[in-house]
Length: 277
Image 1 (tube, rainbow, N blue to C red):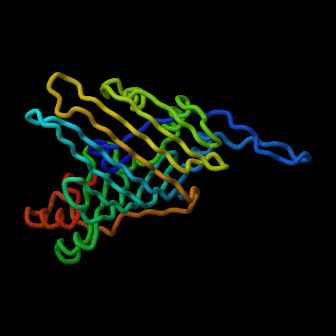
Image 2: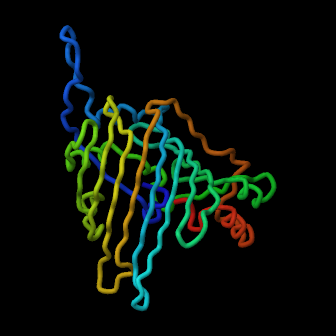
Image 3: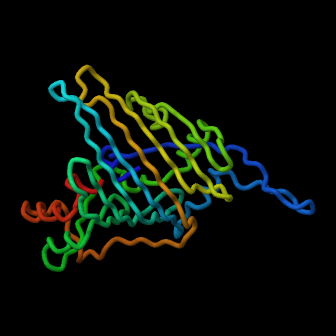
């Protein structure tokens, strides 16, 4: 959940699921039947340094609000393709290609982002051209301890929660629901509900997650009427050897050092106006 959810969530967002017993694989009469590793243990086994997974994620937000008694709507979508590199028990780095678009305007130029630690480095051909000679990446630092980009994917805790609140609807497929507060483990998350679907391969590794969240505002004078998030994430090549490194320091300029003219040029070239988080 995502890049867009970093700020909304944009920050986009999820918490997940305890293992459900899985039937033993069919075996010959002479063979001993062996149950596959449960999904949470299967995921934990992948979260080691040097390994990673490829992801393809389509996410979107639809915001309904009212202005002068007129119903209005804003829709923004994000398509992300790339690789997550694991550390010990977590996502340690990411190398992603991102494209954002909205119903109100044309698609922005796609950009590449590398994330590690609290840092995000963004580039594309237009951004590199707009920067001073010799520089090609813009570096931004997360304001808090967490890098929202590295929250992409599903943690073992996320998976445990979702499985505990889901039912198997077909072989390797689960479907469930939760309140927004429970899903985010945050009582202040507000009113809302979450529906999710999980898909696993024969090794009980995730191949896809689909999460739909509907949130409602608090208070008597809300800034919006309803907010709907949709995230569809596909996983492949679990266990692939992955190494993601930050760009060379002499190719990087801090976002804070961009003057007004250059900042306007890189945003036009595709740099996210509110930053990559």
